[in-house]
Length: 229
Image 1 (cartoon, rainbow, N blue to C red):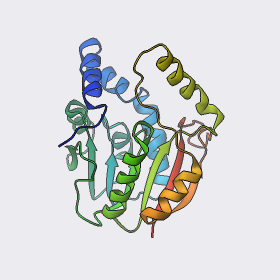
Image 2: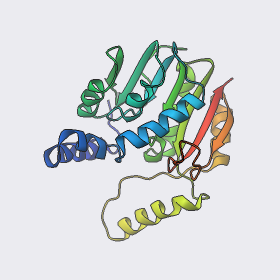
Image 3: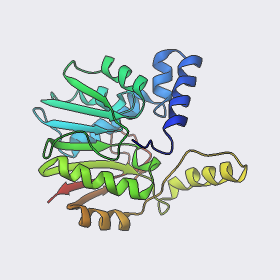
């Protein structure tokens, strides 16, 4: 099975963090920091999108369980599956969530679940680090595993959002210095609408990155909420 373009780098990065920091801090830094705050904001968005007790939920790119940990405080899910590409993150996520939450290492361009398995799927800071073709392949498979009228929530970076320009400029500066930057992918709303149409979704809402509706805080990325036809 072919690995993603960044698997080895990400595994090395996580191992370095664990060797240099206490475990809780390392696991927070591995997903960008703000374990409690960002997890709470993202979980509020998932609940806003329709997550309720008794549902089946898929966390795509769950990392160290930042969102899953916070979501478990808000709703009592029937089932939960989280996938990521680095095993130590999954091991940590398991310690931060209810016993029935499942976490699976998965490095293929697919979702390891049967058709129509989930009510809601979410992915925060995942499409931001994938090539566009990879994003669309995953979008198609997420449509497959969602139940009819199921919901997909994901965050993305867009050049048309002024607050995201700094991330792009930093990526450019890193590349100019002949250092290999980690991939930051920028996707525009018009493109998401086209993807959604072809993958069997309808875009129901776009939440601006600067929005501070989540207890006065902003996620820092734009969020799309899609509904399966």
